[in-house]
Picture 1 (cartoon, rainbow, N blue to C red):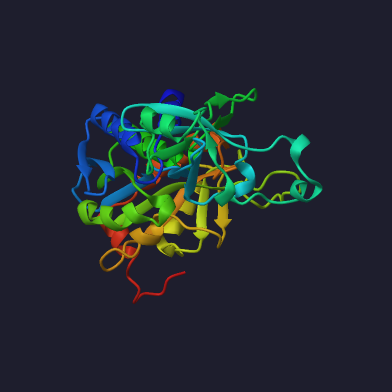
Picture 2 (cartoon, one colour; picture 1 turned 60 degrees about the vertical axis):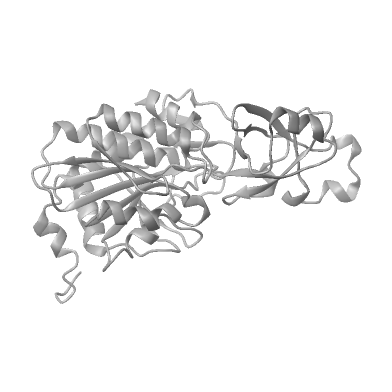
Length: 358
């Protein structure tokens, strides 16, 4: 488990530059014996038919992580950049990053002034991202260009992968959303040993962090009857956090509401009933500050019953984040058990809106 998740988080893949992650996904999908499906934006999935070709169940993480793109090379050799995905500028100063060129990678640091040089006014100022720059140790603009660094090159945060001393907390970059990639791959692997009355298509989309773009194209090649977006939610278990808010170690996180979707109620209730049946603790997420690929999946063609399942994570959209290994294992178990119940009759019941639904 940990080797695959580690490899996924260390792979470098900001929106539009997901090649390393896609290659790892493809290699793993082939190892579990799946037929590989891709769309023309770069999303990738493996298909496993169970006891029936339908219904078709989509499990989708997204390959991209938040990062940056080089937009200007200053005469002094400093690189200016723009964000790819949502960032809070306060988490950036003095952080290490990788600049990927066509043939090589370069380490840089987002520049900051030493406190000795700050005026009293600057000490209390939030530094705007447009004024930040990346220092790659070059003497001038010509040296940067000689090295092959160009405008348009992607910039990726640097962070190691670690298991913390409690042997449960995982620290890494890009858990948003290499966790979803891992969940899709691991559920598909475990289903090799299970009977299920459907066909499962598991993998990941591209460019979620810049507008759910892969989620718009992927359903046309996957043609799902049910869609699960596998993603992280925001843990709120820091100082001052409330007990009823998502936390590490509280079990799978099931999204009841976000800015892009209200889930199919029948599908949601089946997941909750299954969690209760197998005594899997779970948490509920209701947050209007963001969305997931399910925001596009559920609008495909005439509509696709959809739900977001994942785990709580601390510090997402920064260089580092944390999740619970226990939460990951329980989420895999819950997804496997739900999929084993999704036969044609059950799936059809989710869209019978002429009947009273509770």
